[in-house]
Image 1: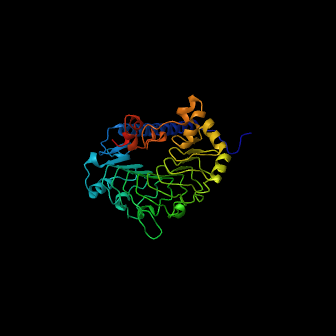
Image 2 (image 1 turned 45 degrees about the vertical axis):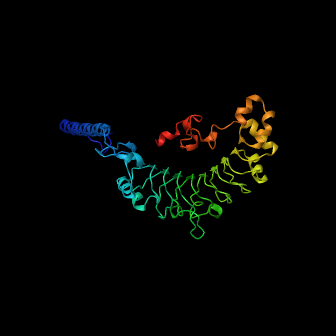
Image 3 (image 1 turned 90 degrees about the vertical axis):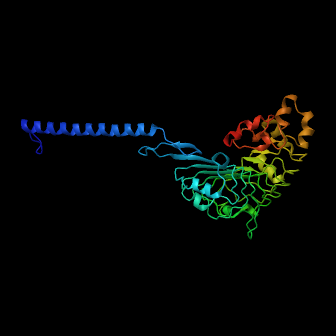
Length: 363
């Protein structure tokens, strides 16, 4: 018995149905061919050469954006680009847009820092590096893009400025909420705010903090940094560490300071959960025996060029002399500074193999 909703098609109806299906298939096939041609054209268009402005080190080729340079990494080298004024600098930066991820400013005067106007369109900026400049004051608040995750200020004339209880330039009072890494190298900063708690530094949960060659004498308590993993305070005048360090820390560089001993609480924390400690070039003559064992067996602690290493030298196997009590290739050029993608003037010499190519980013 046939289903009540089923009926036998007539020959005419069957042919009409086949014809409609054929038309549908032809339309579908035509649309696919058309879309394939559009995509093929977009591919060829994206491969066409695009002229980007001088200073653009990397760019993308989005589809359906013919003829435009979408720069993602821009270097403002004032010597190469013949920039001699802040107005010229602003004019170049104002041509960049939300495509930019990395901005590198090098060999510029820039005494007063970048302006809010120059950075306002860089809505996706991930990293800002300013180095080898005459940056002295930076009094533009809320100048840094909210998207910024890495901020590096290197070889500047940045100075401590006393605004009430703030001891840093105004541009650093309020940091982007996404900031994960902050580096201030070769500046004239002598002090840090109590607890390093200028607005949002703790709130942003910074993971990497590097303040070197800056004449710091004290390290404020760091326990509020619940995410801090990498702390670099080398080449300062620090005499002692705070009693407690963040439990998340896995790298601590306090080389070339005036450290004579480590707090017992820091030693206890290290023994409970070993992490890399660089003590090289400090006037430290004694260490907990358990820490020394970790130094010899696992390279957890770097004690090169210290009185402690001198006293241990003759007790070490000859094969371990160059590993544990090595001599740096130049004054103020530790082993860790070589090949770290950060140019260091002290390492730019023959003995240090010209910083293992780190200056290729600025030359």
